Image (tube, helix red, strand yellow):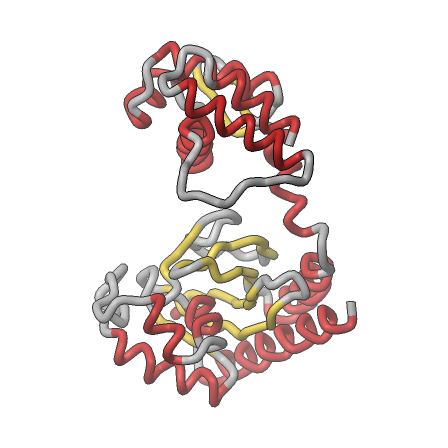
Length: 288
């Protein structure tokens, strides 16, 4: 909590609503003493600004200039520079030339996500064996609301055009990983998550929830989810549900393959390989 207080105190210099932020800092102190007050819907403005800046830097492929950050966030330059200075001191961000990018400390903090279970170790072991056998990429993702978030990937020597960089998100309804994860829920839970009409990423994307529910039932029976060109033209994907980790992460694995490399025999081998890989990772998690 002390680190949070320092960041917020630094960020609030020159920021409006100082009294409100001070009250929140008092609440943080109360929490440290074991007397946290009743939860409210209040959001700390300074932390929201920090989050907005970090989201922009995460999505960027090159250093982002302060002027671009100010325009995207609507922050005044004085407020923005105070935030950037505070974040840079803690190495959450780093300055390169006249812009900023995500820093090493934030990378270290993010990787703590894997330290609470054996998920990554099990994935690395099984995905390496899959790549050695099939020479195709393997991906690991978690379900986060209506989206999947890619948290690990094992690349194959031969190239494939993907949209699954680690940390990126895709709508769960249109990718095989998402369908494998959604199929692990019952229809009532899926309907609570997804609207009746679903956004299309390509002309092949399933856009009716009713059709998706039918497909999820087939996934449950088969134990494997597939999609062809629903996310990217020319790409197919096969995915299987791994399970829920001891800490509640709902995870699945997949392999993406250009449709030009597929025939009935190869598809069968990949389907069997993905299903077996998911089963072994799941059993390793259960034994951890």
